[in-house]
Image (cartoon, rainbow over all chains, first blue to last red):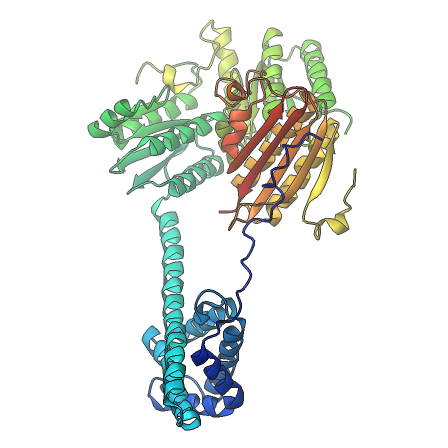
Length: 309
Length: 138
Length: 143
């Protein structure tokens, strides 16, 4: 079979992951890792106590058992992430980040602010310092290194929960936006055989697509002969929008109905001419009322048996 | 299915396409249809494509071919039931189906044929009398 | 040429289909539809992909003297979707630039309708060499 000469690009796995680098040989981090290994129970206890005590967890919302179990898992993930090393910070380790992300989502669902969640993570620092102090009191230089490493890691973890929170909010906003889009481009039946879609606001590519699909489906569902697309409420029409309008009109006619575009303001008419947009055989009217009149005449002519106009 | 069935609908013939069309089937359909037009004196042909979830250039050419051939035999064709996603795709593809009249439904298709044939009888415009753009009132 | 049975299809990352007859084109269309559905493409995008598949397969059959087609997952980073590769050992395309320029429309019955097909998809790659053959790769993504 004919294939392009092998230059490798078709066979290479795209987005091949970069292999994790060797764990950073940072004495402070190594010390921290050792502490977590040797005194995990102690660190955990200290952390859980601080979380429960700092008032961030209002009574009733989260039980001690939940805090303990979540903290256990987080500590373990933190240790694993530290052991894996890798180029970026420990908090950006895929598994740890995912865990922090779901913690953030859970807490948000339970009504905690993102700050409260971050503070809960930051309280790990107090716990670690307390245990480090006790364990390595004799070697202040080493202790300083360990605290430095800890700061970098736990700060990153707290920030991660915040990032996850904002990302989550953005996702919610986007889905709300989409629902709004659906609601804001309703197809209205003006008369027997006539539907109209009054467009309002800016038309981006995605929205234009939705509008087109909704309109065509409405034409089929209602068996309407005429579809009026009113762009009075659209402030700007660029080449892309114009193209979408033309495609919609073309699709309408292909299906066996007809399309009128109304609400073309003088500025838009000028823009279209300057852009070289050719409306061809698509009928346009200045106002929705004019378009409706034309459509009525057209539909009325259908009802009588008279051929032609 | 060996051949696509052709039904009589008043003065017209109805073809409902429900399966994938091969070269062989398309050729058979065209042969059968032309034969039936002559045999029955049918003045109209309705092709129902509401069951098709896609129309490619091959199908487009077949439809255009049927319209052209029928016209030579003094029959008008209307294609009905094109699905929205098919229409959108055809526009994107750049397939305009020139010379192929369309309608939303079987009912509207029959009405269109009535109108077109009546116009032809009274010696008026036998082309697309429905075309908005031809309406001088605009 | 290896054939894939329905039971193994789901686990194989790619599947190969001969394009030697009308029936092969139809079968390829159905498989492309199944892949598009599985990849979560919206109906309009499924339709566009399957139509592109039909166009390309027909080209391979009619102009390329027959060929083969492959269905794979989309290869673009971060994208879910379907990748189709249709190739033939036919005469190849002489003037590729012209073939990809509008004006060589499909409706007129002439040409390969490539500009139109290209508009249906998100990725379009064409390779052709006179006397060797043609290979077209397309991708359609789930939005």
